Amino acid sequence: MFYGEYAHGIDRKGRIILPARFRDVAKEYGIERFFVTRGLDKCIFMFTEEEWRTQEQKFKNLSFTKQQSRHFNRLFFSGAVEVAPDKQGRFIIPQYLKDYAVIKKDVVVIGVSNRIEIWDAQGWQDFYATSNQSFEQIAENMLDT
Image (cartoon, rainbow, N blue to C red; front, side, top):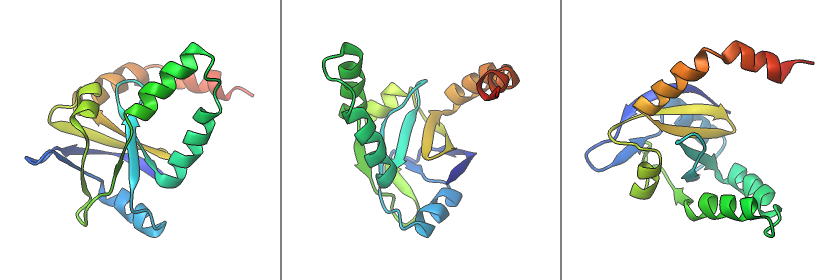
């Protein structure tokens, strides 16, 4: 559903813009709002409401008697906020999420199929530089049939 990599800046009002291609997909599927929360690898995860409900159900089913499950759920859900991009695709991410992802001014918004990730531009460059070198090895290990 969401694919590609787009570089954007945060405007002076602190808003991030949803890439035009993602806005087109949202319009096509009647998506008006998203949920954003702490992601993995120091990025912010952004889900459609439908995908958010799917993930929420999975995580609700984790045993609350297990410490790791409790810790994950606390961090994941306490960081969550609903956002509705305006007609130009702009939305505000709370400061605590920007702090978590070390976002300052420039961001990279990437589509990862069923979710969108928002990265600090330098953080994405660092991740990409490190991961790109092992991409083929990762693919071989994961996709070996």
